[in-house]
Image (tube, rainbow, N blue to C red; front, side, top):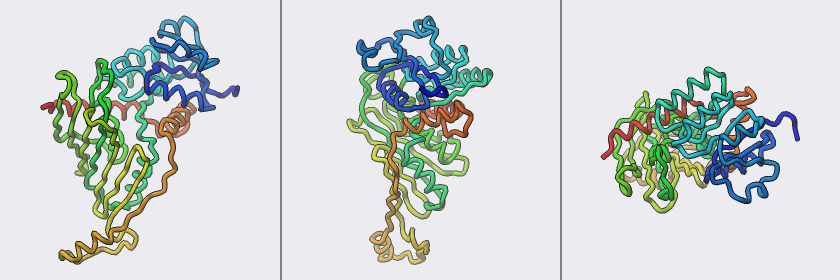
Length: 331
């Protein structure tokens, strides 16, 4: 075992927690010391030799496990209390998105971690999707010229269990708010329509209209109602349109004269048809990778003092703020 591996504890072994368990075990830069979950499987020890399993944080404390970092993948409503507990013990954190259920909770976690000089990362994993990274390159390199509008769709599948502190905004919309802010800067909510379709107390569908300081607009549609998963971004620019599929990890650019860079001056109907038929299409090459693995590497960089693209506590709080602000327009 390498002596420079970072000892880490994982809290939460649900759907995302199980994925974190897998990628941490596969990463040679981390030494997974323990997993904490109230419903730890009976075969946990057999399936994970050398990794201790505990049913509570109190059991973890009593075992006096030596570790310096924690990945929190527990339910959203518990993020705040769990994170504060580990900050008080001087542990660096990677907290699954959203950082917390309220903006005030986020601010407390940011302040307390800063006071102790601790890393506070947020698991906005879509930042590390290769297709999103390619989209960033497309925008930065001017292939779209000036972006005008972003249209985002993230839908699919009503959760089997909805715990306190969660809704479609914090579960789904917060992903794309963070992606958009990483691409075009801070966003403000212009308007939104939010529906409580299945349960009267839980928002499950939303259409959000946002803009940045330069007038670029964005619309985000999220719901738990559509029976199949769709995760896409369409970006309209003055030179073309770019389509991104999060799931397939594809990035496609379409537009007239993309390759020749020759502007078209004629605007008669026949010429418009000709432009449509002759539209250039560029399929960007993307090296597919599981975003969660890339995010874990970024967490390691942050822990070792290297420049990292890990979502900061401040950025995570901003995504929560924008997402929750849209709830004030509930219909």
